[in-house]
Length: 418
Image (cartoon, rainbow, N blue to C red; front, top):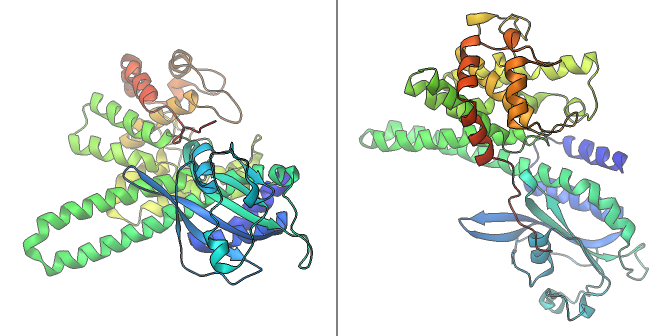
């Protein structure tokens, strides 16, 4: 199964800039090959305010020609795909026309009646997304080992085969969706800039809209980077809040506090450019892999430094792993030569890392994390790592860090129904 997961990772990363629909078509084809399915559909979860629905983004059928238009399925317990989107459970059906009465979902025969197609066996499973949410549903239809052979039921073996990859696929689809939204926001920015020059009378209103679109792009970029790391959860939101609070306690100007409260989230944006094999490795990194991982700070700086508006974010991305005694990376800066924004984020980032579960350790309690931050352990020497003045502020106000952690602790986005 590990090999299958790696195959899907390689398969997805082969075309890193593909659209949601292109990726969905390729993933659906691969799932059908693995299971022998004659037909299938991939749905993605769409949301608007409190409303949710499933949108078909890939539809395939080897037996009949399928229309290219997208269609929607409500997220409720009456349809098979809606049931899976709510509960997260995998559903296997031997004959869609013979679903037991005790099941709350039913098969909609309208498409079969209109097309002359006969749906029999179904395998329907959820795609895991960001923060344990459900990002989509895959529905495979009519397992047929050969073109002229009879339709057979899907097997438990197919469920076990699909289970390890559904989270990989779901996060990849979400990442593609985030990147599309970033592109759309960038187009909005370009349009707003043109309108700004053309309509001077509305300059104030357009500046507000442009700033809102810009900050949305910053948040989406941070989220897209975070999706590369399966262990982050609400990490970027917490680091934003910790950093802003500590900046306020340090007496920084309001504009600085507002900036760090948004741009701290981009501290690890360079991980988008790190070798995926290194980023997803579960064990200890060797020397070469460690060097590649440490490059994320320069990768992040290169991504962000092209925009003067992101100067603070670029500064944070490059220097948040520098240490007070000069033993950090990438430039070996020490003391006050390290930008204040990076020194603030360094404390916020380390505290949250100590509280969070990681492949190499469980999450620590607040008390244990504060003890490590202030007294040290085998990995952290607080006197060598941190600005002593900022560390004293952390020691004095550490309960606010605990409050932020409790407020933004990682929770599933959807409560599954048993």
